[in-house]
Image (cartoon, rainbow, N blue to C red; front, top):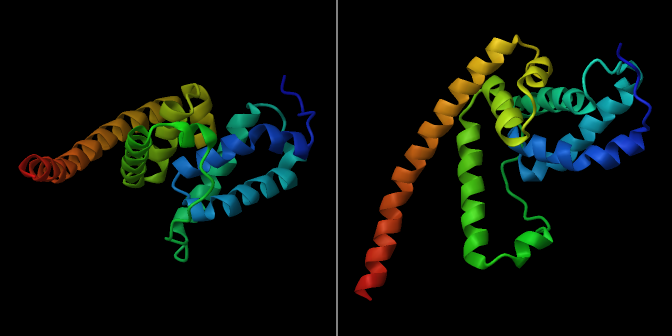
Amino acid sequence: MPRPLRMTLQQIFEENAAYVWRVLRRLGVRDADVEDVCQEVFLVVHRKLATFDGSSTLRTWLYGICLRLASEYRRRPHRRREEVAGTVPEQIMAAPQDETLDRRRALDRLDAALDQLDDDKRAVFVLYEIEQLPMAEIAQAAGCPLQTAYSRLRAARAQIEAAMRRQELVAAPAGAARMTARSSA
């Protein structure tokens, strides 16, 4: 039997803000806007906390809120396009420059590939592959049957794989040109 949550909004925020932030980024909310959308998530949590019945996990419930708000965000015609440099986490600052650059490029490639997915496929892919939630919880958060969630995951994987291959083909000639320029110097 589901039971009500016995946590304050403050506790929920402290324990889940980083999770919400990360999920929003992977769902396509740009760095410049993620703080605002994160606040919107916790405003919804504040309004709806009394109705949370515990029939799903807290993270599944939060993800459902993130999913809806990120989807609304992506449809907004006025969403900001600029990228604002934020504070770099210490573990990234400590990494060697080449490794940090490679990691940033890989994340940029993943973000670009995720941007090509529709919201339904993106949500399932992010939850399963990045957040590593069980598929039953993902289906519940996405409001779809379990087999539909699996179908979306298969389709998303195929699209991500194709997008990454296209990006490698585009990046390869530029990399080859740099190598040729270095060796002739």
